[in-house]
Structures are given as structure tokens and as C-alpha cells.
Length: 320
Image 1: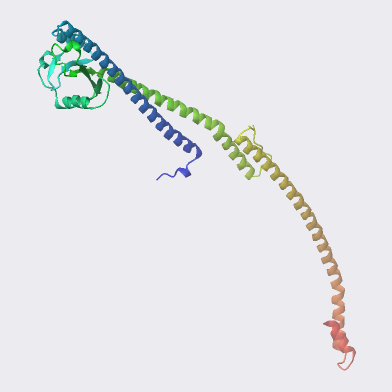
Image 2: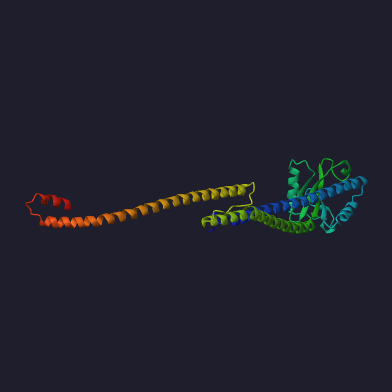
């Protein structure tokens, strides 16, 4: 397992930049994609709502004029747009009464669609339109209320005559979104690369290079070069470190000079003491030679002196 604490400072910086950059890129791409998707869905919903409003007003006009047969033609003309998959008018039982596709008239809608319509009626939502989004399609359901224009064909007791379903195909916009996603990812990666390069260059210039220079000078000081100084100095943390380094080298040089002076004095003193020792040894030698002769003479005298002689004891003590 990698131990990041043992990495060099440069590799730690690169690693953290990569992680932060990747997370930032992922977040921005995710935000961009969701924003684009929301915009597409919102625009499709607005289009479905606008088409539903136009068709609803057209139906009321045809009802008022007694020309309900024209509804089928109107639905077909409006659905000729490339991104409109279909338009249907569905009664409460789920039967398609009018459709942009003639062969759908009289059929029953899928149970899921019917349940969605009835759920729409049972909710307290005051809006006239709801939306369902299966895959690349947005289904808009709009209530067609029972107005006075409709009383000729519908009972005045009914509040809702039917539902208008508008199917909007946003697959084209989805393809465009996918292209924009790829562009967005490429731009994000390019921005991350440029940002990483700029940060690394700044790190190299402002931190790594001064630290390397300081490290080299410390090595030279360790080898004994006390005349080295760090320059140029800047008014930042590295500059403060360099000033302290220069001060330390200066103090170390002064201390070294003082030690050399003390050592020189001690050597002079030692030489002086050594010369005195040699003189003392010479004097001792000069003194020792006559004393040896005198001792030899005393030994002879002591041997020749009779033991009963009182002087015998004195000679013996002198030889001890």
C-alpha cells in the first residue's frame, strides 16, 4: 500500500492537484449535463403545453361552430412537426376519440397511461397539464374542461370532457446534448491540464527551486564552506528561511573563527609547556650525574665503615 507521507513534496502536490481536479471536473460535468437535460425537458414541456393550449382553443372553436370533424385534420397538421410524435384526445374510459394517426382512433390506451390520467384527476394539483418522461419522449396530458361550447355533445354535468395527450420527441435535442457533453468533458479536461501545468510551474519556481538551492547550500556548509550565502531574498516564507540560513552561517563562521583562535592559543601554551619540560629534563640529567657519583662514593665508604661505628647508621640513611 502506498504511503503518501513518504512521498516527495512535488509528488504530494501533483497527487492532490489530480484528485481535486478530477473531483471538480466530475462535479462540473455532472452539473453541466443535468443543467442541459433540465433545459431540454423544460423546453419540451413548454412546447407540449403551448401545443395543447392551441389545440384546446381550436377544439372549443370547432365545437362552437359545430365543425368537430375538422379536429382530426388539425391534429394531423400540427403533428407534422419533426419533434411531435403524436397527438391524441382520450376520453375518461381511456378510449382514443381523435388522433394524429387515424388508425389509433377507437383504440384503448395502455393501462399505465389510463392510470396516469385518473391519478391526475384525483390529485389536488390545480395545473391543467402534467408530464410523463419515458426515455427520449415527453408525454403531456392536458385536461379539456367542459365549457358551454361543448354542451351540444356533452352533458353539462361533466367537468372534464377528455384528455389531450401530446407526445414530444426530444431525441434530436438529446443527440445535441450528447455532443455538448463530449465537448464539455474535453474542455474540462483541457482546463484541468492547463491548471495543473500552471500550478506545477508556480510550485517549481516559487517553492521547489528555492528549496533545492537551499539544500545545496546546506550541503556545502556541511562540507566546510562557511562563506556561502543564499540569494536573492524575497519577502515571503522562503525569503525568511533564507535570511535565517544566512544568519546561521554567519554565526557559525564567527563561532568557528573563535574556536580556531582559542585552539591556536592553547597550542602556543602547550608548546611553551613542552619547552619548559625539556629544560627541566635537561637540568635533572645534569643534576643526576654528580649525585650518582656521590652515591657510589657513599656506598664504598659505608661498606668500609665498621658496623660498630656510629657513622655507619648515618651513611645507611643517606643511601636510602
